[in-house]
Length: 150
Image (cartoon, rainbow, N blue to C red):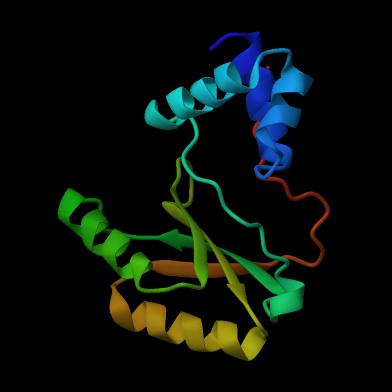
């Protein structure tokens, strides 16, 4: 990736619907060259998807919960089963295997605490877990999907 590719990525992360001619002008190349660079980055997997970012509050999902999970099972088969279970829960928007005291971290979005309680009950019925603790976000201070491309 050269500086033009990085500029393209920075602009696309802010607005993926920017017209190609405007983007090309901003990054200093022709429209055709800009389009080719974008296609090349898509094919290389650098650009994974073009999506709409939805306002959670406006669609009734204002509650964010970070769920810390510990397990006594660390076999690959168990992790695959857990990953399959996670796919069944649309409330889980992020899923990480962690180092340190916690084995896994989930980011969950729900309409309210009662909905989280329902989610929690369904989760613990779906797979054996040693410990599940929840932290409710009080306020979203910074949220971005843009990566710092330099």
